[in-house]
Length: 276
Image 1 (cartoon, rainbow, N blue to C red):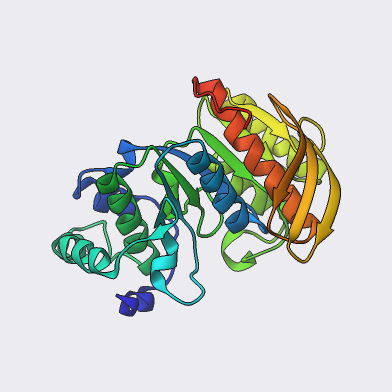
Image 2 (image 1 turned 135 degrees about the vertical axis):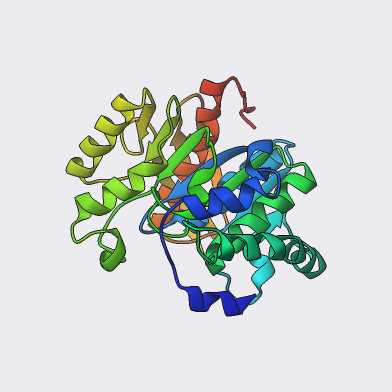
């Protein structure tokens, strides 16, 4: 499967939509939270999944890239996808890839498109309630952006992948804003007011709510050690006197605030999460 990397990274949703449609549109069988950002998107995606799992939901987590094993990318309730299931789903997808190569207007899927399809197929098979999904690159044209996320998270925006996403921070922010869904909710920790105003305009156009860490969601560090750090948090719904994360660095507090905000924001879709 890693041979697919020779097909590079080609932004666009036509290919992935076709691929998913031929395997039953698995991404339509679970609710999702979608996370992008220049930094912190992987940690935030993992924290969202952990909070929802602690609430008793069955949760899929899709992140990239992996550190040591491919199966790290696709996780359900803390357990990585078995290698045998990866092989099985790839075998199911192979005939569809052949169709795509022969179909005018389509192309051979990229490595990331195939991995995205594997993840969504596995999540649907496992009957997850939620998927916490990390964007691969950018947002608007990323293969993961076929999901109908209830909540979108944009941690922050700075210059990255300028050859694909744009030469300025605002151009990149516009690409990331593509994950904001009609009638959804956006959580962001951007400190850039121009970026914030761009997000605000997109949310207005899409009738989406928007909340900003540092204004609507506030936190204060209490203690830190090599084991992690504790902090107070004033959320969208609840105030927490002390929360703990086994991660160090002030940036992880921002990520945690985004994650808590994202989970609390599910209430705008009728999903209530307990204070505990």
